[in-house]
Image (cartoon, rainbow, N blue to C red; front, side, top):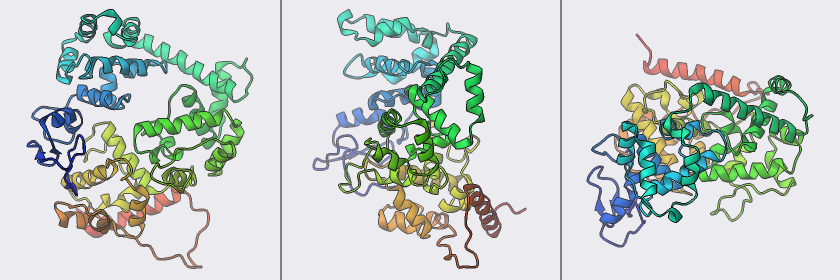
Length: 448
């Protein structure tokens, strides 16, 4: 972890008056009591140096603690969420695991759950745990589970799942088709042909309608996660709140109105004209819309600041449990590399340090993450000063960070002779790639 906390508080309850003891595993987190440390371990295990490997059961336990459906891909695969198709199945499955893992309920430990899965006795032991308590105390999720054991017991074949998923998606497309006022008697083939014939950004809109009507929203690995403002949300529950705002909006406007607003970067105006509230920053008493959401939607789908792509890159790697130096699935775009210092990484250790810094930045406590300030520091060419002076972060290996946190900004102001109109994202990416290539060559990166 590259940062030291600016002040000592209990990592669990926030207490700072009582004597605090430091976690001996990482020497970074502080706790006011053994009980607080025990309670926080479900979260802290991901930041500490545990004596065992982190398992998908640990990711599930964290999701249970936060009352959120897990988004870690292998966890979803191991514990049934990846096979959930109907929009009610994942919440019901989460409810089952809350009853199973919550310390105030059945209190099964993550290591125990992990062992059951490896032994192939997960379903059997879930039943045993719930059936040892009175029937009236089992809640509604356990009876649901008994009717949906195929999510975990492996009895559903891949072909059966694919057929069920295909049927569900066809129904979702038809629901969205009818919702936007298209003829209800159209065939599935006609609906798909129409969808594929749409221009790119209109296809984005229809795909988003399909998601909303399925009770879902864009995931971090999609373009819509940025262009529809989900990148501006701090937490998963904030994304759900934004999704609810969109669900309310599409019931107040036509599909054409939504598409026009999206393609003209005026979605905020559409929300306001229809009297639908967008999420706002609770600490901001002035702006009716969260400034970060406003920033994204005012530029989408054509112009979005590279800080949002940086956040997508960092979040995607965290969600997928990827190593900092492994870019086999998602790699930083040329604009991210040039803007935020990745082009200066000459070794895996450099990459790990830089990734760790941005990971720490985006995971700060609610209300403390300021992406727009980071962007401003980026375009002013003062990233190092932003972290060390503005945020007063105590960076270890300070000389290394000072070398890495360098970019080609600030750029000279365009004059009459070099002002260019109509620059697209593709143009910017290509130009940035050329800048990056020049920077790498000047540092000897890639030389033989």
